[in-house]
Image: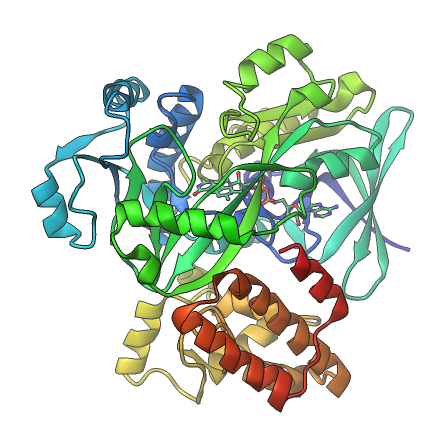
Length: 545
Ligand SMILES: Cc1cc2nc3c(=O)[nH]c(=O)nc-3n(C[C@H](O)[C@H](O)[C@H](O)COP(=O)(O)OP(=O)(O)OC[C@H]3O[C@@H](n4cnc5c(N)ncnc54)[C@H](O)[C@@H]3O)c2cc1C
């Protein structure tokens, strides 16, 4: 078995893990991050896209609100390229509780969140699709945040400082001897090879899988897994983020992201982090909630539904660094049976007092607070190494894709339209919806290296994410991939089938109107013309959502 060594091994390539990788690399430690899939394939790639101002949490979870506004202001400074400064509105409709408004205003003042009132007339002039029955509105500093772009910036920034990232490497064992971690065993999911990593400290940043990773070291980490669904609508209904001005509920936020608007979300407790099922009832309720903010929302074309699982910490299930009672009081603000009111602050655990020295876990928080989470746990790591290097991430601007010259992540439609208009786009279009050219595809395949999948290319280029949901571009992409990476015919067919099945999966709960027509067309292309039979394993998954 091959082996590598480092001072700190980070498990999990979401925002938290990537943030820690960047922070510790900046502080001069020798760090390796491992991710079982591609970067951002866990909760960080399945979230709502909101750079929180914190205003959503001011009434019930003021600690989380404060963390969000502090980090919101920092991220605007250090990572402007991943943020679209849409701004956000909190809007009260006739259905919303008027008694909530003074509590909310007081909470915003206490958390230091700048709130500016605007009249319904002003609001409707700016956003004509908004429900004209809106009673009261306030502007807050929310924004939209591209998590994939953020992750790539963090990982590339760390790489420039010596931090190493291994994607498609799953931790399958943790080596604990005489009460101390010595390292971990990895499985390369592309080649099936095993790899040993020697490490003095392991940081478990595996999000909703943190409990599973803990088990590998014989630890019990109490998690409350809260699933939420989101739906992407094929229209950017508003240019500003709309939040319902009422206590948090289902489907009460609409986020404009690129060319689409994403409505979400829900909060349902699930038993396993891989449970991403979506029921027609959830979809229907989400669209009803959309109608409150935007009349005729239901008539819009819904492109895709997906779900993510929040990695909330529930100390009830674990022995933590605090006593159970203290931890419970601190971290569970007000629990209901669906986990809605479990605090969104974060928790770091040192497992030394469970008999495993050198192992830390960080869970909870928000994508918005990833940097603060990374700072706190990196401080803890530095203390373990008796180093006094201070955190500098709040002052360091993250590298932009242009700085990186990697050609990845140039996926915003305006940038591509501009290139098309100025004849800078060469070679044929592969994906008409997202304007992806063959040149870009070839470049991304080259950058992705051996084993690059159609789904990796989707995340890099947005290929297959537009209204046709892969109908016209998936087979072309698979063809180019086969040609350039010399896949066998069987491998290419399997890759195409898995990709198409996954697209169908997100489409299926939304089949009516235009999207139903599109789905029938896609099905005729792939099932009837190309003869792709469904993958029985994926069909099984589909039954559960
Ligand atoms: C529905 C929903 C909406 C949300 N909306 C927002 C929002 O709008 N704004 C906001 O700020 N926050 C939002 N959040 C919260 C935010 O998305 C999460 O708090 C954050 O993304 C968690 O990041 P993470 O890195 O801790 O976990 P993850 O992103 O899940 O990363 C953990 C990684 O660990 C990897 N992993 C697991 N096991 C192993 C193993 N054995 N070996 C190697 N790798 C492993 C996983 O593959 C995964 O990629 C939302 C969450 C949900 C569920």
